[in-house]
Amino acid sequence: MTSTVQTATSTVQTLPATETLTPERLRAWAWQRQGLDGSLNGKTSEEVLDHAGWARSVGGANPYLTLFARAGVSREQADRDVKALKIHELPTARGCTYVLGQADYAWALQIGRDAAIAPFKVLARLGVERGEITLLEDEVEHALRETSSPMDPKQLRDVLGDSVRSLGEEGKKKGASTTLPTALGLLQADGRIRRVPVNGRLDQQRYAYTKWGLPPGKLDDDGARCLLLERYLRWTGGATFKQSQWFTAFTVAQSKKALAAIGAVEVPTACGEILWMLPADVERLADFEEPGDEQIQLLAGTDSLVLLRRNSADMFADEDRGKSVLGSTLALQADLPDHPILDRGRIIGLWQYDPGKERIAAWTFDQPTEAVRERITQVEAWIRDELGDFRSFSLDTPASRQIRIDALDEAAGR
Image (cartoon, rainbow, N blue to C red; front, side, top):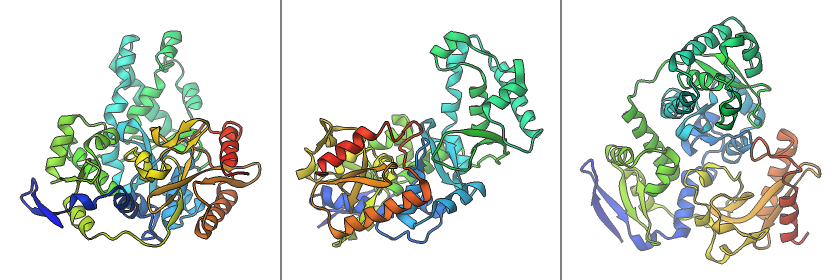
């Protein structure tokens, strides 16, 4: 059964019957839209990030697993793509850093520019005028033009001397110990410089800066917001208004204007939520059939499947919603405390990597099938041979995650 609706572009769309859009079907639909069903095997890093969405990077290994899980891209190939500027880590939506493909660089930076400007409110209260930062930006660019090697913040401070002003104890309290980070953020947001990992790896947070000169994008701010929301709905296969605002940080007015401009459609679901979807995806969802066979993946807790809508609670089957680790019910937490093991969009367990024993500590809610055991073995070998460890974020260490490794082992009966 279907129904029709008139969109902002005056095209009549056929909507799937509300009662058919169950949590189970929508989980499998999002899984397929994310390319986790094997449909992206053999694709390039750029193609994966264009299809599944930008990979969140906080000094952790998520970008590598994003590419490996969907297309089998090796860590070495991903690093080569970073070096060749086919993919790059840039600040964009909400001022957060993501790894994205080169076709998105200019407009993605444009989306994040407001976050780069925001520190001026703090600096102004500390007596720093805009002209001082503008002069510092010029001096940073000059310093980077004078060298063929990237320079880290300490090297830049040494070269720039008194041009970098210390903001004292008051500045430290407000998160602005010197004027240099603000200047670097603005230069990066303008595409005049770029930040590069000092050892070429994405799973760490030691950076240096080099000159760039990225041509500006051709979109105005409204156009960039429309493009981001169109990409977001394509990556997710549909999201609530609130979920889209969390990812984009657009105002209500900006979100409504962009949704209207791209002809997005409101689709009611069986659980009562309203999803905003692209017209083409409405048609695809009406014909979508859930896969019958297992499709097992181990993903990072910050994978696009989970993070874009921040809806991990929706990925638990009803019988698993009460599962808990270390006294915390998993389905009640905004973000997963461990990495998920999934089957066609349903979370069926959790995992962490134990580098001391070179193994994955895994807990599945039910007895693991052969497909689950095989995938755990594959990812375990990939981490051991290509990454050495699997960090969630820059400050994640084997020692800091040991309590979680022990808890997963205990839950699994080891």
